[in-house]
Image 1: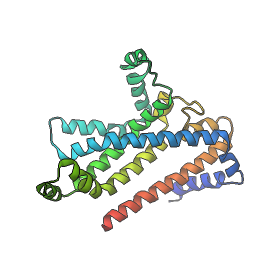
Image 2: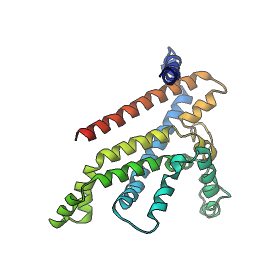
Image 3: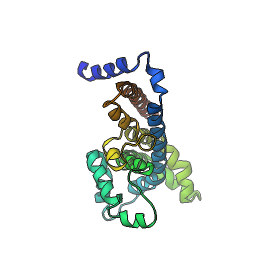
Length: 245
């Protein structure tokens, strides 16, 4: 227990000092916070829009290749982030599989704001997919069938029955996705680089500050600890609320 708690306490003791707020308001820290909040916000929106239909499809239908598809969608969870970054470069980089068509369209993906979002989406979206799929599977099919018998169409059933009943799972998955996206490092630095004010997120700013000025690194580390604790508290609260229901 001491081994697990001591590094966290050390980060808080060193980071939450008299220079915390002045350093927090500095351009390096503010840029990293702004980029992280904007990119993770985009990642969550894309995850909900694209991940929810996929999770519902996997929870409700059986089709050839479903097991293989489910496994492939879970693969980024166990894949090393650096390998994920290499894969993104080979797929969307200038010399990647889609690099030439994107260049012809005037689109440069690598080392851009979009690259940060794509890296976060690749490594974090599977957490939402797994949780959302479990949420949809937990909904009683008899309730949905009863609504259809009363004349409700498929969209109405999903909007007023399936979505509300699975909402606790969906929200928990979204919180986990945001936390994973916020802490992403390996895929981001390979695919998006570390450009201050453009692609340098909190984790990249911490790594960069360790080489020059330790103060921003300590402040950002303390912020990450506080955010991580808050995320865990929210997830556990959601789990307790779902259990009591």
